[in-house]
Length: 325
Image 1 (cartoon, rainbow, N blue to C red):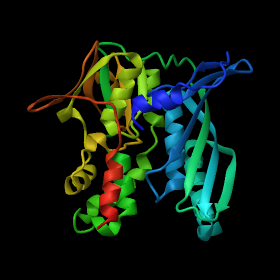
Image 2: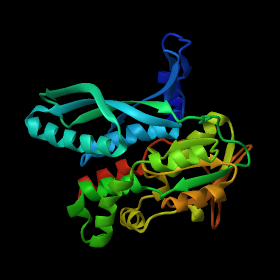
Image 3: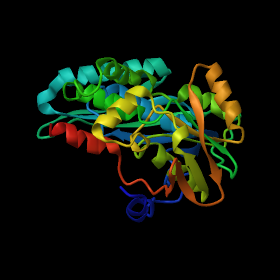
C-alpha cells in the first residue's frame, strides 16, 4: 500500500491515546515502544505474504528483525497460522518445526498464538506478534542525523532471491547456474539481523531499519521520511551478492527494490568504523550513502534519479512471471 494511502486510511485512526504508548505507528516505524509495569518493551506485528516455502522460519526472522532494528532483544512471539483444510496437520507440523528451530536459534520463546484449519482458504496465512526488551544503554530510536553515513549489511535482495530460488527451482534451473541457485536458497540461513543490530546499537548508531518490502531503496526512503531528511545513495556502492544478481538479471529485476530481510540499514556518524567492527564479527557491510538535509537521490554512473516512496516490491512481479512460465 503506498505510504500516502496508508497514512490516510490506517495511520489516521490509531484508537485511544494511552500514556503507556511511548511510540506508536508511523511510516517506516515497524515497532511500537510501550511502558508497562515500570519497564519498557518493544512490540511488532508482521505477516508473511510473499513466500510459500520455509514460511515457518521466515516469519520468525521477519518479526524479530523489527525488534532488533528498534534496539531490542526479542523475547517471545505469538503466531497466528491459518491453513487450508486440505493441507491438514502435516502442513502445521512442518511449519511449526521450522518456527521452533528458528526460535531456538534466536533464543526466543513461542509464547502463544492461534492455529486453525480453514475450509475454502486458498493458501496459508501467517502473522507473528513479537515482544522484546531494549538492550541496556541503547538510546535508539533517536533518528538519522544530517551527515550520517548509511551502512548496509550483507547486500541487496537476499530474502527475495532466497524465496524465488526456494519456490521456483524448476523454472529457474537452466536460467541460473545450479551453484548460484543453491547459494540463493542458503541465504535463508542469514535472514536474521540480530547480530549486526547488537553491534550497531553498541557502536552508537542513530537509526536502524531492516530492509523489507520495497528493498534497499524503500528502506532508505522510509528511514529519511520519518525524520524529514534527505539522502544520497550511491548505486555502485550497494553490495549485490552474485546469486542475487544472477536471479535479478534473468528476470529483469532491480535488486535495490527487491525485499531483503536479513539486510540492516544503519545511519551512523562513523560508517567506516562500523563496517570495520562488523567485519571483525564476520558480517559483511558497506557504506552506501549519506544522510543529507534535503533531497532524496540515487546516484548512478550516468546521473541521478529521485528516490520515490515505495509502492510495491520486485518479488511480486517475479512471482507473477515465474507462475506463468
